[in-house]
Image 1 (cartoon, helix red, strand yellow):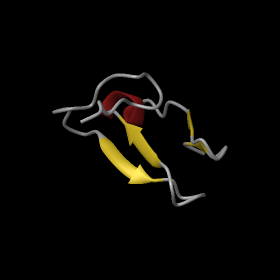
Image 2 (tube, rainbow, N blue to C red):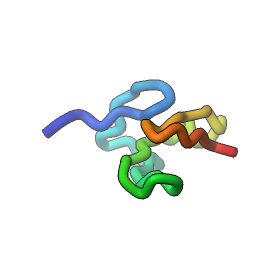
Image 3 (spheres, helix red, strand yellow):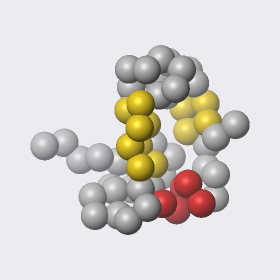
Length: 55
C-alpha cells in the first residue's frame, strides 16, 4: 500500500484524526488528500488537473 500524503505539506495522514480524502471537484478523477493542520490553516493545494483550493 502506498503512503497517503497531504497535498500541501506532504505529511503522512495515516491515523491522523481530522484528515480527509476526497475526489477533486473539478475533474472528478484525482484524490485530494489533506491533513488536519493544513485544513485548519487553509493551506493551498493544486490537483493534477490544475484545480486549486481552498478558494
